[in-house]
Length: 121
Image (cartoon, rainbow, N blue to C red):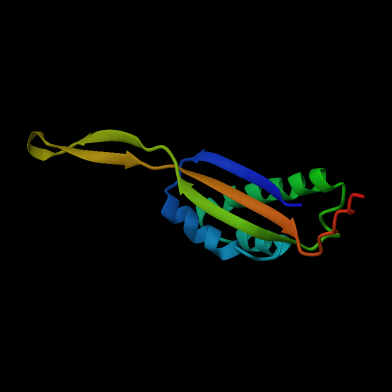
């Protein structure tokens, strides 16, 4: 059983967030937490919090301790969110377009040693 955690309208560009997301894709969940904790990027702090939430969601869903299971980051993807559009004054009466980007992040966590569901008779 996989568990999902989502972060919507995060005020960071998708490109910056994807660079950090690529570091933890497919890794063991606790190894990924360590990587995010010691990463310098601002986005890593937000992803670390989101990954902890996904691990807790998995624990609630499966009635098992996440530490005992072999959890890994099954999927992580970053999509573009809403964009705030503004204008910045420029010389000679012109204006520069200013786009403040945001993104949506989704993390799916699953156990490698998944217990098979009992077959119904």
